Image 1 (cartoon, rainbow, N blue to C red):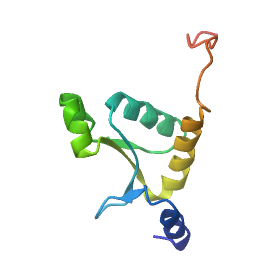
Image 2: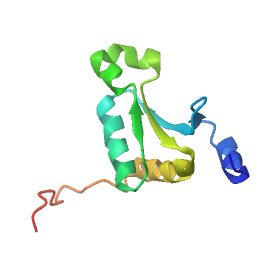
Image 3: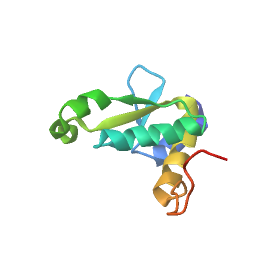
Image 4: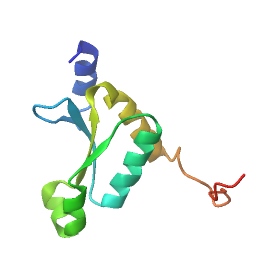
Length: 106
C-alpha cells in the first residue's frame, strides 16, 4: 500500500481493511436498500463497489445490528474517491427536488 493512502487511512479510522484482500469497508448500513442505493451512486461515479452480507440482512433484519449491517467494499485504489462520493451523498448533493423529471423521456 502506498504511503499517501496509508496516511489518509490513518486520518479515517472508520475505513477498515478486509484482511487478506485488496478491499476496504467504506460504509455500513443496517437497511439493505440504503446500502444498494449507495452502491449505485458509487458505481455511477466509476467506483467498483460490492455489497457484503446484504442477503443475510434481508433474511432477518434483526441480525443487522449484531452482524454490523451490510458492508460496502471497494478496492484500495478507489477508497478516497468512494469516501468523497459518500460524503457528497450525505451532504445531499445527489438529492432531487420535488419537481425533478425522473421519467427518462426527452
